Image 1 (cartoon, one colour):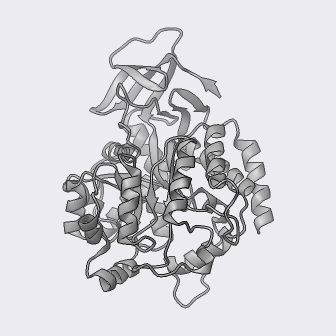
Image 2 (cartoon, rainbow, N blue to C red):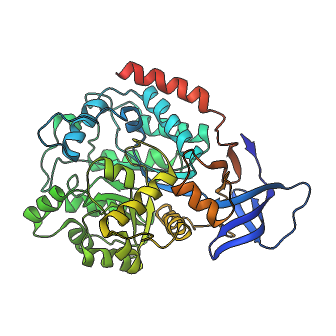
Image 3 (cartoon, one colour):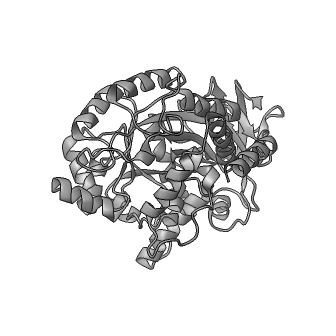
Length: 436
């Protein structure tokens, strides 16, 4: 990979926080953008590209699940749901060792970069050995995720997951959850080890998996770091939470935790209008995972009303059944169209993309191509330029339209390919063949 730091790049058209601009010179130093100059003239030494976008943040990923993509796409029970899919995933999770986890994460990160994701929040809960025995290094598997990120160049926010219970009310964990489970003391040691690996947040898995008292301890442990949590993904979860507490999941969380700008509420599919408005008012971010939510039959989040209330969202690849920033955005917009029987619900390709980049707040980062933000940049290869190029890449391209990707000023993808792509895919196929 080529390091472009320090340096400057020239784009004939670039999507800036205020909209599209022509003939933009972007200068970066030490991984940060230091200047953005529209209406400039290029110089012979500058690298020139047609259309530039801010890199897309990936707010929610379980990389190990990339290796089981396609394995749960047939009906076994009279009724299939997230919960039946989860049973397949639990069985699969028992098969992966640390080497497998690193190989699969490397492949997932390569695919993310090639499709325009420049950063990833890895919601990592596969902590222990198959059978539940702790590794000698409590952060063994987390270190493998960090190694994969370092090898590929993607910017990683590691989210060690606290998971202690099978359902609301502190129910004992199920045997198949043994690889996930920690006490609060053990989890504090895990977080300390993860912080030595790089940027680290805290992830209470869900209100099902933590008690209110444990949640308070996790919030204190996080401090100002990002806090991500699954919430209100399925109606069964909503019903169970109501039966346990008398409140809906988002309602309960907002009453019992200091939800604010450092929080990411993952999915929130079944948040109602009042809850969506409250999330927006708290300045938290919702992490939408449209492809996974469609694949699991979760439901459709009402993004149009949430945005009208001033809400922030980002996108994530979650189960990694298919990794593509453009296709996540396409699925999001198309789901809104189907639900409302309208077109262009989220206004335009530019508005859709801009809104999704605001998910950088879930990393504690500034969004967009602006001074001070990370030099995460994506260029497109299409028949058009500017907004037309973006629309083509999301809605009208049979192939991935990403051409070049920089992460913190480091060039990671050239001509649509990552330099590790071929070797990584070969190792990945070997792991999948072994696991199957």
